[in-house]
Image 1 (cartoon, rainbow, N blue to C red):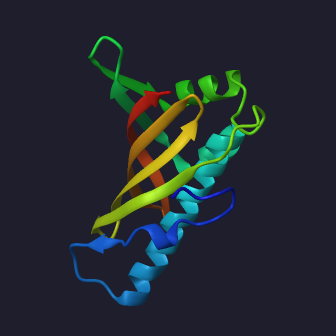
Image 2 (tube, helix red, strand yellow):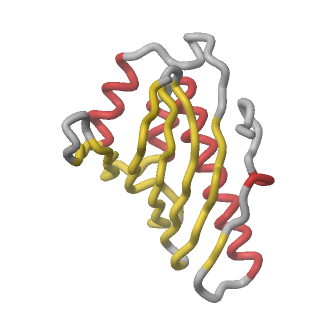
Length: 149
């Protein structure tokens, strides 16, 4: 079940790790990534590119299969222009639904998150690659699938 605005999705998933780390260090990284994902959810729902900019690295890109079946690559700046040009889900009065499905760590500075969110009538499954650089976690790549209902 998706989360409501401001709620965390911690109970819906369990992080996995394929490397040796101290329990406290991993717990700290999980909490930091949860915060990044919550800022992403908030920014997406509110149409707030400042919040999205906190969650997404300046060099980040978004990827999907275009209508022609070819890979589409969108730099963060182009995505932000698109977000700024549309009415936000919040301003449209849309119910908020977003959740963390999973977080997987492949090392101390790389993680992969699967999340679900919506901007009706579009529903997204996002695969987010996160890097811990300069002491903070940020999304460096987003590959997504959209269903329109």
